[in-house]
Image 1 (tube, rainbow, N blue to C red):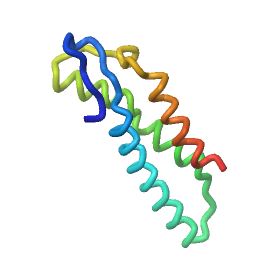
Image 2: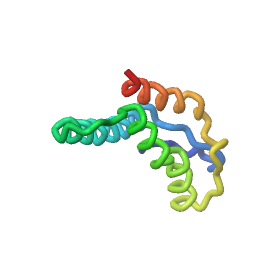
Image 3: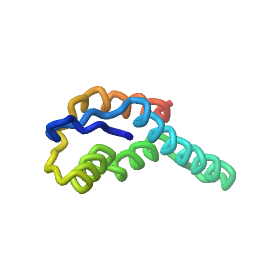
Length: 99
């Protein structure tokens, strides 16, 4: 599970391993796009592609929405207990493409 809901259903903690696996899948998709663009000799901006993938996915909002729907909760983004740490994982992911 990508996040764990606490017993009182008032906060989520992002699971590092599952979250990084999800980022890995996004990365694999971006890498495939880059290969296709290279083959077609088209220009691309890998960093922009990565930023778009992350912003379009709205990863944290999707996690909150999923839990709210499944658990009947009313959690908000601020209810992710390790949001700053998880944002750091996203920053690491984006750094991979900013070379």
